[in-house]
Image (cartoon, rainbow, N blue to C red):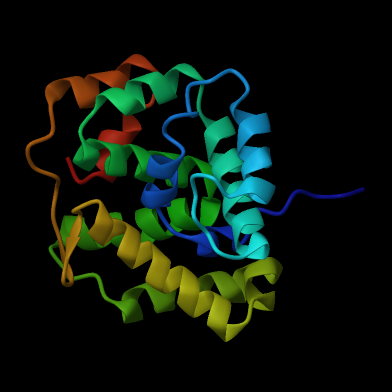
Length: 195
């Protein structure tokens, strides 16, 4: 009997991947997106990632994230501001990577609610707790743990939720942005953005 791993370290492939999703925006809403993004692995026409091995890893994560939401999500995504797009990509990361969701709930959200700062040490402490209880996390190298820690904090910074070590709710977000998530049954995301 095989068991599905709860956590994986694939988030280290690039954090938010905003630049990469922006690069492929012209094909995001096409019906054959998965084929076209696979062709990009050899052709490198829009991503501009110099090595095929790096492109392969990023493309694998683009496909994984693309498939976690309904196809109509991408039409909506292309219609919102860049700032809102980054928050939308955070939503996808929280849905795609259980490790990111865990860190966000157990560190980010708790620190925001208590008014505490979020630093590398706080994230490291949670990673240490997970290492003690999860064989998969315990098997990761120190380098992988550090990369996840760094990528998580960088993702929050890229979304405007972390400035230095201060956690902040996003500002200047349209009501229709939050309404979209309510409408698709994902209203929990607003709380994840400290709202």
